[in-house]
Length: 140
Image (cartoon, rainbow, N blue to C red):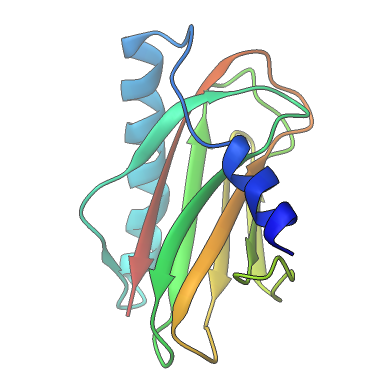
């Protein structure tokens, strides 16, 4: 399992050829999406992760989550990105059941952990060529 985690971390976030304007647009799109969850009482966590997304090259983010809380992980990417998906994994690499949302160049996953600890959020796209993306999460 440690090798699986190492493989996850090797695909860590990084900025490449994505322009600053594309990153700003992705952040604006993801904040609009996360705003919808605030109608259900979710608060947007300070901070965000952004970078460049390419099809076939998932991006992984480690987050510390608390049992009893509910989370929405929201991602938006450049408009040329298709098939965005957000998945959540345990520290040992096991996939967790999530409620998924997808619309055009945005996606989300709702997750409520049974135990507190580190989790990994994976972002993938079926079609993307060096597209800027931004990930944020909300909690309640």
